[in-house]
Length: 211
Length: 221
Image (tube, rainbow over all chains, first blue to last red; front, side):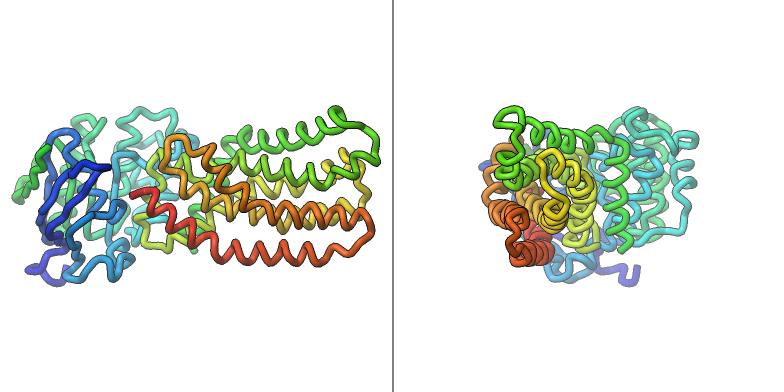
């Protein structure tokens, strides 16, 4: 990442509404290279909405978003080409196999690493399940298929909505390892979770949303 | 291009895995069309009179049945989010989805058009014009339908609203599609109707993906 001092992503004065209810307002934050930002707050406080606003799915009522110092609205495709978003829903087709799902998601997404998909699924603990329809996998395994995108995508900013949902201890440890690798490589992360990441070397910053 | 192929291939693969979902609209078309001889009259003269209209109306309805499948499942399982955050132009990905939809719904209809013609006593020349009108008209149904689905995909019960939105827009296709067939049957020139259908196709191919992409972003908001 070229410029360490200026943040990868910055938001000022964000305000989002759900129907006639104001979820949050006046949210300011920035994500620097090598930094993880956790969004915490009670259920219904707007964590997912904030994450969706950051990835551009939800339009914020107020506030400005910046990517590498430039207004995001000006060039959303440059931003999206460096973005990896894993939402609350996994984005998997139940009738397709893990491998077919991952291939489609890879080809839709931005730049990718030169890692074979089988190797990614293997590392995600899905060896032997590549050719099974996702319908037959457990919810934890489905989450692992979605999260194996972390291994093949080459994105500067990861936006993860509740990455630990349905994962067992080994799965959660894997996510921690991948996150640490990503931060060491100079990437940034924003995620929502009730469970803190166990980062060994880096500090974890937090935004708290009130209900 | 890679993303276009990926989206189209995923939808076609899904269609292969859910064969019954592909077969049902087609069977619907065949059964409904074969109901008319039973309900009205099996006399060839009567059937020939109403055949162009009923074939096109039933084709319209069978496409309408399948429209929701274009974006509804993607909306629910999170695939649509991934299309929207993709750096590839959403318009292109929408064209890929509509293309896959047509290959699964419009193309089978086109392939059984000789059968539809036989069920309603159309002669060979008229059946050819029927096939031509379906070839030009059914992609329009998919493209225009995509706008409607994109607008209603965020609503819990969008189905009824979808038909209210989309059916009026299908009227020009119905008029010129059915009219091309009846003109051919009466030995009148039908090229004008087919050319107009071609014009609708070009218009919907260029404009509908833009509208559908914009509608998807609004629905996702």
